[in-house]
Every structure is written in structure tokens, then in C-alpha cells.
Image (cartoon, rainbow, N blue to C red):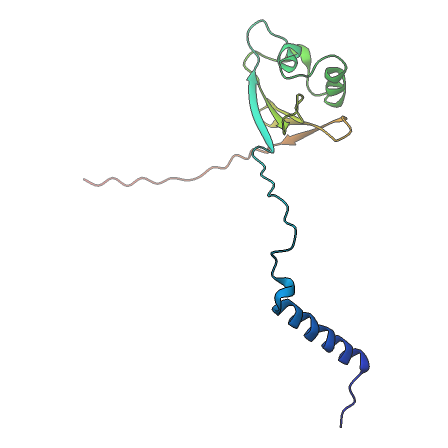
Length: 148
């Protein structure tokens, strides 16, 4: 005959007791406190802005709450963004977290091959990264047949 360990017997008794208590009126769930559901309507929102004629980069960023020392720190984090070389028509995309007054992310295309991402962390420090796109040219032979 096989010996049964005492720990297994205790665990089995505890499991049966918990099951019987759950099946009884003790755990109907009616007496447990319930928290109200959390509804997130807009975790973030995005908007885009374009550099217009006779505008500077600081004008565009200033419309989105980035000015003064914050603007200086953003430009320090993104040395590839040249404020004096921003062309008319360049699009800047802004992402705001919740109902924040300042954007948490700024994105713009520097060239057909490069997209600049500037993100602000929880401490308010800006970090920049450039996403490069590699273009490859491929010659594809084509054949045309003509039917009369």
C-alpha cells in the first residue's frame, strides 16, 4: 500500500473546504465591494501643423506650447533639426498625452530617407532619434505580347 504525504492531505482538505464555501451562500459576490469601471476616452490625441510662409520653427512649435527653455532643450536634443533651414510646407506632427498642454512627441520628415522623432520622457527630458528608410532600385524585366 502506498503512503500518502501529510502535506497532500492538508492541501486536499483545504481545497475541498474552499470549494464548499464558494458553493455556499458565503461567496455570492453580492457583498463584495465593486469599483466603478475606468473609461479611457482619449489616452492621447495627435495633430499636425505646417510651416507657413514667413514663419519660423519657433512659431510652429510655440503654437503647441513648446517655447523658451523647452524649445531650447528640444533643439539641443535634435541637432539634425536646423531651425534656419526649415522649409515652408514642412509638416510637424504632435502627440499629446491625455489633456496635456505640451506634446510628448514631435515627428517630422527631414528628407525622403529620414524621419526625426523627438520624444519627451516622464522627467521632461527630450530624446531624439532618426528613422532611416533605405531605398533599393530593382530592374524588373517586362514582356508584352500583342494579339490581333
